Every structure is written in C-alpha cells, then in structure tokens.
Image 1: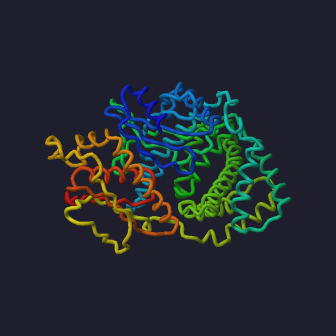
Image 2 (image 1 turned 45 degrees about the vertical axis):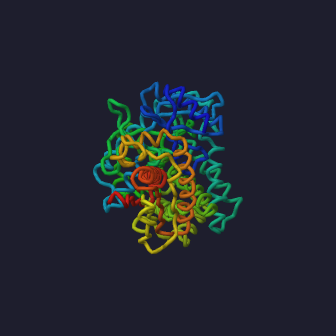
Image 3 (image 1 turned 135 degrees about the vertical axis):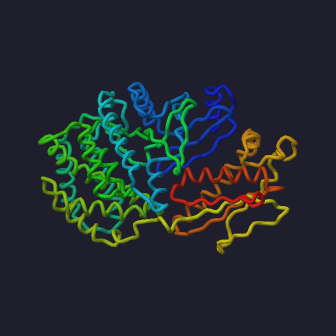
Length: 486
C-alpha cells in the first residue's frame, strides 16, 4: 500500500488522501482507487512481472494507435505496482444487469453500445497485429498448446467435477483434431483473450477528464481493460467471447444482428464470409468450454455463487450451438460428453439471480438515539462505532454540513485514521457478503454510528455503499441516514 501511495504522491504532486480497495473479480491482482484533492487514479498490485510487462507493452502500443484503453501513468521499479487511469465504475455488463433488474434489458441503447464494442474490437485486432508478441504472456500465440490448456481446464475442472463420464484417450484425440481445425483459420490478429462485457467500461472523456456515469445516466463512450493475456490469434475468438458471454444472455436475434455488424465492419462478404463463419463456430465452442472450466473451478470447486449461477446459462449456449452449428470435423467422444453434460442436472439449475439477490442495508445513526433496528427480521449484521474517529462536528465551519457534503468529505478523506477504519470495516463486510452470496442469503444489515449521526457515520456509510456497488454489481444496496431522514 505504501508503494502505491508513494507512486501517487510522485505522480500527482500531492499526497494521497484516500485509498479504497476495489473488488478484484476472478483475478489475483489487487486494485485500489487512490485520490487527493485534485487527482484520482487506479493503483494496481500484481505479482506476476511477466504478465505486467505484457500489459505495459500492449498499453503503450494501443495508446500510440489512439485505441481507447486506460493511460498508464507510472510504474514502480519493482514492476509490480503501477498507476493507471480511473475509468469510473460502470461496465457494459453492469449497465445491462441494471436494466434487467429494472425490468428492461437489451434495449436500443445496449444494441448501440454492443455495436460500438465490436467496431472498436475490429480496430484493436488489426492495429494490435503488428505488436512484438515475444512480450506476450504466457504464450506468444493462441497456438496448439494454448488450446489444449483451455480444453484440459474444461476437462479437469468441469467434466470431472460434474461427474460426466468419458474415455480420456479418445477425448484427447478429439482435442487434437479440434486444435488442428481451429489453427487453420487466419491467426494473425491481436487476440484480446477476455473480451467480455465486464472488461468494457462505459465512460466519456470530457474537458475535465473522465466523467463517471451511472446506470441511470450512462455516457456512450467505451474503454477497454484487462487485455494482459493478449497474444496473436484468430479474430473469431474475441467475437465469440463478447456475443456468447453467459451472464449477458443475449437474445439470439440481437446476437445474429451484432455478428452481421462485425462482419460488415470487417468487409467480409460472400465465400470469404462463409469461410470465416465455419471457423467462428469452432471458436465459439472452445470459448464456451474454456468459460465452463473457469465456472467449474470458481463455482463447483471454490463454491462461489456467482459462477455457479452462470453454469446453466453457459450450458444453454452450448446446447444451442451443438443443435444449430455442426463443425466439418468428427469429434465423437467430445460430442458424447457434451450431450451428457447438457442433459445433466447442472443445465436445469436456476438461471437468474435477478429478483432473488442479496440486499445489503446500510444505515448511519446517532448513538444518542439508540441502536438501529433490523427491519428485515433476520437480525445480526454489523455495527461499526465511528466515535473514535476525528470529528468535524467539533469545528464551527462544519457544523451545518453532513458527511455527504464536500467540506466534510475532504476533511475526513484527509485523515489516515478514517481510511484505516474504513478499510477494516469494508474487509469485514466483504467476508460476510461473499459467504451470504454462497449460501443464498438475501439480506445483510450494516450500520455506522457516531455521536450525532451527522458527519462521520454518514461519510462511512456512503463510502461503503460506493464500494459495494463497484465490487458487487449483483448485490442490491439500500442506504439510509436515519438521523438525516434520508
């Protein structure tokens, strides 16, 4: 943490006044939002130096080509700590999820954003083709070994954990045939590797820098993150990653329209288009299998609820693919295993967590008015006592403000004790949220109390709410400042 704060001070020309941990998703990288009175950025701690070097090189290349990726501000001498541009909190998936939660879904705005994403992807694939891929990690290309890694990931972390029977030797032979077929495609593009809606930020660059949209008021520009696993490969893979993202659950009609849009952008027509599509369905297959491997590891093995809920959606994509698009090669053992899989109980699990999601109710309160009541009837939760923190209410210039107002926010954000307290409380809440999601619980109460329920408790409750909305888009957050009547 100190390394990031020192980097920030050197870059911003002023000390870091707030450092907030962000959710890391399925990655081992740790992310923090660092800010001062006038500057803000994302700090990253990543221990894999070779992967970091690939990210740095790709970023410099894409920025030089005017591609919409985050600016890399500064890298520490250890090459494990670095600062990059803060692109806000709203991902393409987060926007789609919120629309679905509100009863909408894939509306014209979403179609426009997906079209833009595919247009940008075509440019990224082509301008990235001349990168020196010797820097790519772990492989310079999505080659036979990379393909077998993905297929074995699926075999060991999904088929075996799901107790699907197969002949291992015959399955390996089918893996060989599938790999040979896929590598007959044109493999001279930049393969982003994880081009999914969670790695697409909905942002806009204005006169004062990046403006942060919300789900209710999104802005239309897109930026792209987490391409450190990029390498040389076929263009079909990344199109499959976006259009067949399981949790996005795109309607078939929109998926087909978007595929046509991409092919038109690439100016692929006639026999050239048909040949491209032959390989496309093969890359859809391996992408779905790779995704199932990840869901098996994170869900069936690590028991993380988000990934478990994604399994039936991915299996539905797989079932439809098998039924509608046959490959021009024989894969008998793999096909039998896939049919057993799509007919298994895993495919019949609930496919939506919308309407049955975890709600975290956050309150601020005054100890003078008594402890808050958990209206959900569940009892429990966490109450954090803010009275040991520096109190802006002791100073006349802050007495008319609350913890939602800029003067109080700046006062508290500048206090190291407040940041330490917030990080500790957020860590405790994170532990509960992770377990509640895993166990299908639907409610968690969190409260911050101070003397008057006006400054410190309000500020801490607001910060926790922001962190939860950023780190857990699948969680519903309710925020109430009891003494402020909001």
